[in-house]
Image (cartoon, rainbow, N blue to C red; front, side, top):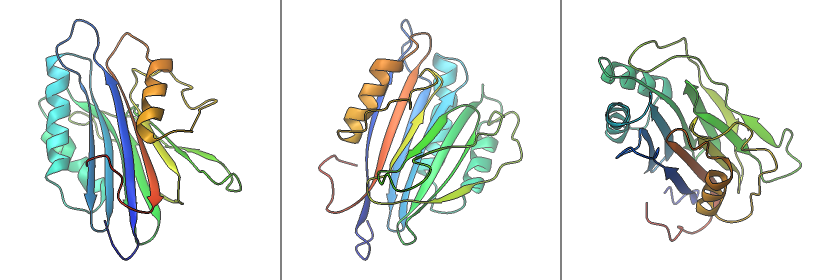
Length: 210
């Protein structure tokens, strides 16, 4: 946390493994730096051990990274995943000094930003995804920058969650409760699923360990 700004990211994650599989191919990363926070969700193609291995490689790449360009991080993951089944990924970086969020996505991990202030239009902003697979085909990619405010919510959801999870979303409760509610209501039941909810807040450290 940067004490000059006192911004933090509080977050929660809910996930389910496809019945009959030992581990999930859906993984997440949340890392705090003095300058901000990196939030990412990775979905290894398919399910089972090979999907999990691809997702783990992407996660390990992000966990060893330093704050910088999201495009460079995507390219690093793409190179690391060559020869694997491949994965799709959406990621964001919250910049505490500027109160902005930079995000991008390759594949079909949906992203949605919810503004707490109803005076902000639009109240919901979807992540523009680029088709492709890390480790196989990397498309031309670009990152978008959005101003964020106290209480704004970022949601990433893998394709094990049905489309439309953001419709009539009850955003009351903490990020963990919101993630669990989305999973309970929208899990397809035919694939691994993961929902990550991150909230940009101004205030003291949350009690949830990071």
